[in-house]
Image 1 (cartoon, rainbow, N blue to C red):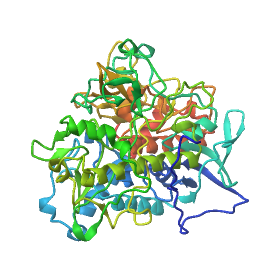
Image 2 (spheres, helix red, strand yellow):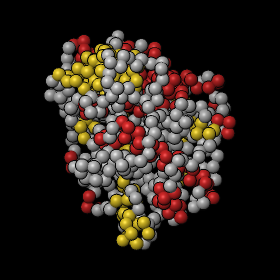
Image 3 (cartoon, rainbow, N blue to C red):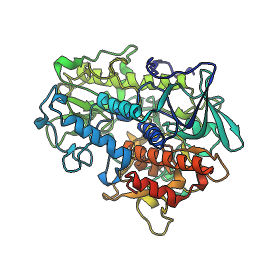
Image 4 (cartoon, one colour):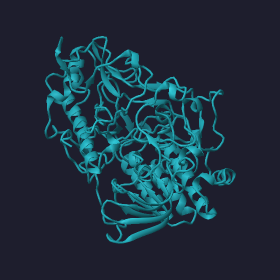
Length: 565
């Protein structure tokens, strides 16, 4: 694709895990595709229920976003944690109770409050913040203890499965290997195996009218994480005939509430440090072009310096959420920040032959898009530290930060996974919407819970637009749900009746765009991964399609294993 110019391979193989015979067929009772936390939880649960398990790892590092910088965990309410998810955060807690874990700072100096939960809850013995390498080590230990076989590889996106009617017989890896299984679990962030099995899905935002919602679809560009000053959107300021700046779209307020094809923005959750002995300084990335930061410069020149941090002096154009040992989970924050808005899809019509979005790309093309995001974020930090158009009062808040030497040591200290906040979403016999999350009684409610969510209905910005003559961001939704928890339906993690009979989809669940914005949190993924694996084992033992697993039996086993329903 000539629209995507950068390239960087994020797939890192080690030799310690099973690669299998390149010409042979591997086989297991349960096959899990995807090495994110959701896939790890599924694989561990199935193995603990005495089934043979193959976990296919695309990146060669377990944990997905949980071990790729998202250490400032979005829990919402610890009531949702149970079983393997609770076990993971308990292991985090135990790790940081050891004084030897605190090598660069004193435990007593670390912040007590995290994202919706204490950083270290001594009563519940849960840790909600952690360094990436600690998370990966815990996942490695859990998989090894359970006896899961880990296979490195990526799904063949052209011909991903051998099907017999509505059953997957084998999944195909791009290197030619085949993996036979009785039950399959798609733990990928993209829903690639689901798509290969012919399961119905959607991409983008539904209209509010689709499911009688209020915060789905196109929004007014006036919400959070916006540019609050007057910023000219044209190539030549004040001259509409010069054209819009790259990445800026026209906007019609009449479209509010309508659906579209666009994806909420992605970024890396960057792990930074200001510990001099553990820091790699950030250099100007290869191919750096200051024109890519014109919106940033104009915003700064207009007086937009982001938001103040915790009521203090620090200017925030991205977050400095603290992790142990003087590290951060640096996420998007504000109108110009870590998100490369519009960088994960084409604004051509979806029926155009050159249209693309993250879900339609090959693995190599996704690596190219991910590299563009990486370079944007590295360039952003370098710019804030060095560029003459950045005011000194802003620079002083960013100098002295770099990448930690002891994280992602085989990837130039950069996270393995880009944050795919949303890709495909299954359409099954039950679609989770804001009405279930908000417990709206005039809509069907969940009667077959396999886990709970509790986080805000959260969508990052989707596009930059011209609104009332100025540049604004559109798509941000932060709908607080009042600290409540809500159940997630079993039907939302299995295909509709009449579609694939031996597949579970615990990440790209059947949900509307805005409902998925709450469900898509890593702790919830672990919960749903464990529940999916439990149901997979019951389906194998009962010789049943996944749609016919007895819910009462499933519920009994989930509760016995500590799930919170």
